[in-house]
Image (cartoon, one colour):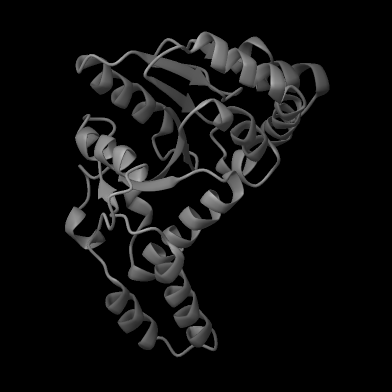
Length: 246
């Protein structure tokens, strides 16, 4: 199974790649690691394939006199142009039970530009691929933000065309009980807002819960290695055909 870790900068993608891989290895699974972040300085795991052998943002900044954002965009374009070579390196060098793919720090470069869809369309023919959308727990302060998370999860799945599950990271520093939110709670929050877009938001809620696959959202701590079994179960359930998994 290939697992793509996706999320905004600082959400814990690299830490989770390492901690989940270690958890899998401790249980006898063979794990391969892939780094697709051309700007990372340090990795807590040893990658089987590292995109920095092809392009780095540091070199682009030096050679092309680019800033950090421009270098990341240029790197993403270079990676997309060489996507067949990258996919070949991933599939040929990562002969394991799980291949964990650490995506670029800026989620938008992977998901909303051509790089992510190009990669998933290439590698998913070789077996099961699942995306893990990682949310920083400190950014979730209301039920409306919970709704936004659900929307982004569905958008990621539509863009990448692979099953997508959502985990809330850094659960060790927040009260995880606040994430136990249902549709009625979201609607009650929306009703309290006197805004023109409330009716539209209601429609969005109904659409999300109508078309999203039945699946729970779990809270983990990548730093402490907590919740790894829950994450593993979600991945297994993603490909289960036994019915409702809520």
